[in-house]
Amino acid sequence: MSNNTATIKTRKNLVSTRTITMTALLAAISYVLAFLEFPVPLSPSFARMDLSDLPALIGAFAFGPVTGVMIELIKNILQLLSTSTGGIGELANFLMGASYVLAAGFIYKYKKTKKMAKWACVISSVVMGIAAAIANYFILLPLFETFMPLEQLIASFGEFLPFIKTKLDVVLFNALPFNILKGLVIGAIAMMIYKKLTPILKGETLK
Image (cartoon, rainbow, N blue to C red; front, side, top):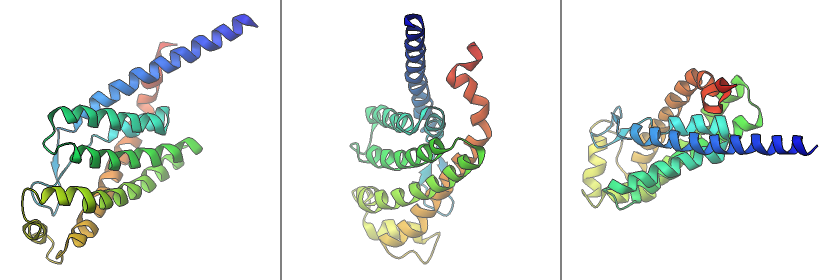
């Protein structure tokens, strides 16, 4: 009985150590991906997106929603070392990314099937879109006002979508839909590679 208990403890320690190691590795990859930015369609040049939430989503699927949030947190703490927004941009990024992986992780944890993973990606994309709308309205757009007047900021979006006339329009017709799109793109990529990465992430190849 004591041998079985010792074996169980050893396995738990190995799992815990591997989870910590993979969390750190995925966070490092996420940090690097944050520098690979792409222009957002129908948006000014300063509005860009990246795929840095992908490792966090994979971590949430593999080890649970808390791990996904931790990856987002570590990524943004690392970004604070070279921040140009006084930490405000990193806070907004964390809120959006954490809402995405937290929702996806909880849904997938409920039932770990391919169908549930797809639903998790779709629902979490909507959640991130809503979080992005709130973060943009109350955090990011006011931050941009320190660099350019609000009217000029709105006009820069209006050049691509003429019906954008107010800050709320920017949020509803730009931030919301494109963050939902971003979530769906990241989710689609995760669906293609997650199962192939699972044995590596969990150390099953070492058996």
